Image 1: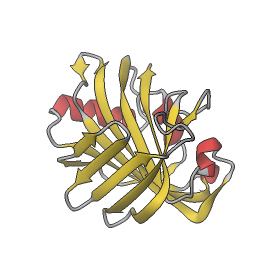
Image 2: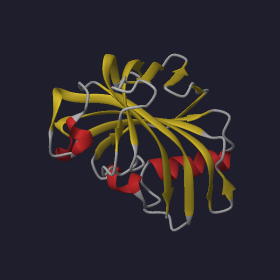
Image 3: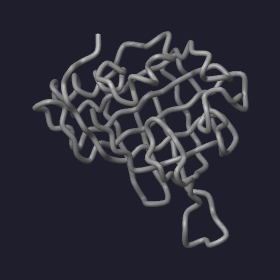
Length: 203
C-alpha cells in the first residue's frame, strides 16, 4: 500500500556497482550490465527534508542490491539499512520512502524488486571528502568512491542532463571499491562503476 503522506528530501547520494565505468544500467535498465548480475549499493545522506511532520535532516541509509544483467527484467534482491541513530518516526519514514511505499522515484525502482530483506538498523558512518566519499557499516559494508580524473584535473568528470530516477541531473563519474555481505546480498567490487550527486526528491 502506498503512503499518502507528502514528503521531500535533499542530500547526497553515492553508488558503486560491479560494472565497469559507466554501468550500462545507469544509462537505461534495458541495457546489459557488465556481468551476469549487477551488484552494488546506493548510499544516502539526507541533509534536509520532512515526511509529514517528521524531520529527516541528518539521517542516513543504504540500499544494497543484486539484480539481473538486464535490470528491467526485474527479480531484484534488495536490503535496506537505516542508521541506528534515527528515531522511530524517522526509521518509519525512511523505510516507507526507500521501500517504494511513498511514491516518487523509489516507488518506480521498487517495482523491480522481487525479494526485499527485513530492514536493518545499524550504525552507518559516512565521510564526505569532496572528491571522495566513504561509508562503513560494521559487519556489512566498507566502501570508498572517488571521482575520476578529467583532462582538467581541477574539475570532476560530469554527466549533464542525464535522466535518472534517484540522482540529480548532474552527476560526478567515479570509481569505487566495496566489500558487502548481509548473507543474501553480497559483493566484492574493485575499481568499478561509481557516481555521486546531490539529490532532491519530493511527492
